[in-house]
Image (cartoon, rainbow over all chains, first blue to last red):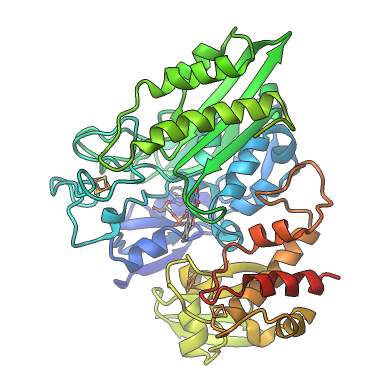
Length: 330
Length: 162
Ligand SMILES: Cc1cc2nc3c(=O)[nH]c(=O)nc-3n(C[C@H](O)[C@H](O)[C@H](O)COP(=O)(O)OP(=O)(O)OC[C@H]3O[C@@H](n4cnc5c(N)ncnc54)[C@H](O)[C@@H]3O)c2cc1C
Ligand code: SF4
Ligand code: FES
Ligand code: FES
């Protein structure tokens, strides 16, 4: 690992000033950044440690929204009473990610900004447009079993690996950013970019901005929600496909639906087409399958990942069935 | 170089380390505490698990400087009935993963006692979660065992909580 300077920021003002140094990077739990620095994929000159910032609380705002400090650890957020009861899909998504040790280290802000797990991205001998713009993409026609099925381009077919963000997308979360220039808020849906011809641009954050908080709307339907993750082993593996879903059914008819998919694109994939197909439809297996079909109609496979399209279809249907008929066949 | 202090297994240690030195290397190479093992150095195997203020973490992805002034416990500082249970139930073969398994199990039991749920917890609303074999396996999934001593590990933890 290249040597670097280390600064620990006691408050937000110090942190956002320190990050204006050229070559400076924020350090959260370090579970992604330290790993990438050791592999020489990230080479910061200065590391600004933000884990001592007082942004590690969950607050209920007067209007019912929930404000989550960006330094909150993934494990603490998953264990929080408000998240467990009002947004179970978010607690489940967090608990489906990484391991107990990593969740104790990982921060909410770092989770949002974690980089792809495309194997060529961390292989300095491979061509990768994300790591080295213009060099090519060895995943296209190469090892792409876990590549994107939505929104990929001829430059990059990588996925965003976060589980947490899939739930945040379904919940219409907001990200709060702060820099020396001020504070702004962006919807999480759309925060992560599609690759286009510039896969090195991954999110809407500017180089000098700090994620300070994530806000969740007051969303009654989320109390009946669920996160389902399909992976190569039962635990401690990234998703092949995952589904975050919330469903409200009245008199046998779907009155509200929230659906997002993970492991399928460079962003958590909000399934708008499936949501539209569900609204007003009878809450039946047939409707659930049709909604999945509506979303997956737009999917495009790479050479090795066509299986993910059928897997996503079944995962969506199964999750909706599980929500509608708790205790019913999974 | 950075001069930092850290409480390790109860005694205050002074360390003079470059910022790029991991907590794992600081413990092993600078303090001679070689009970903590390096498996992958990528956060993927759990062999390097230690406790920071009682919480389990992987020390390979932790920069030592970030843990300045914290309270670190390594296997050398653990005294738990789990150690005897691991012996009794053959919770290991080669033993390379064992210090990480035991530190992880100690941290896991603290999390469970505080009501933390896991990915296999059915009712997220309850704070009293029964620590079944399935729960133990899920909560310990961050610790890989190349020898496949998992059945013994689960049995040892089951005995340890009785
Ligand atoms: C073995 C392993 C398995 C994993 N499995 C999963 C999994 O199954 N599912 C999953 O979702 N994730 C998984 N992860 C990834 C893990 O969730 C992320 O590494 C973690 O969430 C990153 O958080 P952090 O605080 O450690 O970020 P860091 O590593 O500290 O930072 C990551 C990036 O975010 C930037 N950053 C951090 N915080 C802020 C902030 N507040 N404002 C601006 N920039 C910031 C940093 O500069 C850096 O670029 C796994 C990781 C490992 C090592
Ligand atoms: S898919 Fe993206 S991250 Fe992977 S090699 Fe191609 S450009 Fe790089
Ligand atoms: S050595 Fe740290 S997790 Fe493998
Ligand atoms: S006992 Fe050999 S790796 Fe676990």
